[in-house]
Image (cartoon, rainbow, N blue to C red):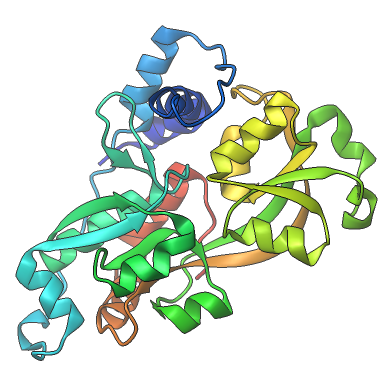
Length: 304
């Protein structure tokens, strides 16, 4: 298990890792997106960050018992039978993102999902999904669950068997650091242009406040819009804003403004799935040896 010192080192350098990640991600998408200015950073430092900040915790995961008596119609039994839990995600730091060194998925949710997979005796496979189509992907059995910092909303509850909340979050405005003090509330931002992730809680917040906005593919894209000056501000999760903006990051001239909403994250399984109850029990039973260390590593606040 990583020592407290290792975790502190990871906290210091996680923002630089995000910069490296974005450079790799956008390089691979150059044929479909407009060119963007790559953030300057020291290559040697990035290598060091990639080695330390993405090193996964050696968690003390205890097996879930009582899985031999699942019924024939059990969704969890089908997952266990095939030996793989297929998890739908997007590239969203610090919840799910790729280690640029190994090209493997890591992050709070990635490690959390892998711990649950270990506890029920299956491998975990991550598949990137279009966030607007996540419920279709779930119902069509392309994925077994949506596990990607998903805000618990009425729509999520309607379309999934949603777990109990596990992490607290908020939608925050991000803009140029020297402009933050000029905007004390949503009303003062009425004339600004925003960028938001399509289908996200950030887009809902923009609609609720009657903001003028452009919907983009990811929250990383929304940050890029502000960085490049094509948007005055963006609305993203506070978890990502903490990791990606401020001193020592590639977005050091951007900063968090006001919080527009507060929310909680949940995992969505297929409607009627018995996997939800098993995950809820897993979270309660193994909070101290799984979720608490992960929350410390990624500087998140647990919801329970």
